[in-house]
Length: 293
Image 1 (cartoon, rainbow, N blue to C red):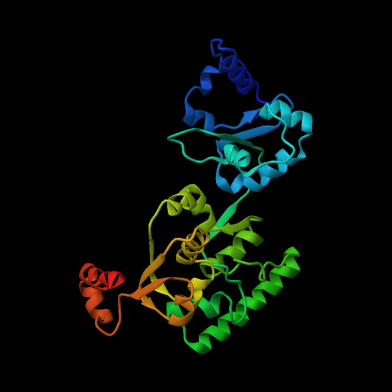
Image 2 (cartoon, one colour):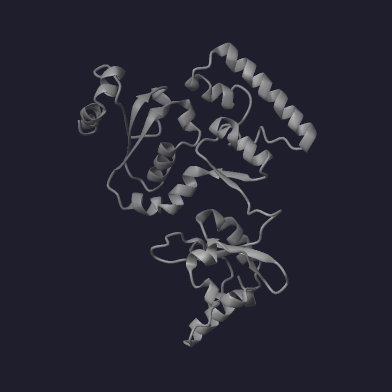
């Protein structure tokens, strides 16, 4: 944004206590964020709110600055860039403060980022078809057949485009949609939980809690690959808070319970799946009471 004439005038006038002289056509925040702005050199940029996922690029930018430039920016000597300084530029809460980023379109579009809630890869026994197929009703012979067909597709794409992201972590997310983002949209994938946790300031909130309770419809081996409850559990463990989980059903109970102080399934010996579906609120109350037994 340093190259934007309007931004520079606005900032200088504000800092000097002078009347502001912005472009009158851009006083509407919606118009400002929804418009491409052409700089003096011809570069067209867009403006958007910053977000926590910008942190790596912000840090890389700040670390490239000379000691003299850092001194001018932060008004103190800054030999190392601290996390709090990065957070100043990636703060996301429009109700408290607006932090804008200028983005230059790449091939006509801003970089595409996919948020994935699992770390599943695309192919093989631990890939998308094998992990998600049974949930959707696929039989074993169908799973093997579809995985072979998907492998052939990946091979043809590799020949045509020269890229193969099938082994990239999260490429199997959403049944393989992650692979599509990486391959055809030339985007990247990040942890959906990490992004949400940053925006919600989950570490701060969990640190202030006496006990943390999280939940999931079904906890199984797939849940271990980056699902929300395990992200919550990791943060709770880090700050030494008790972590409890309640789920509709729990499979592979021993592995699941390693991550939680208490783990309760709504469907158990006393409540059938049919009974839980018929009265979910009552079943939840009945089983949640077991947390305090």
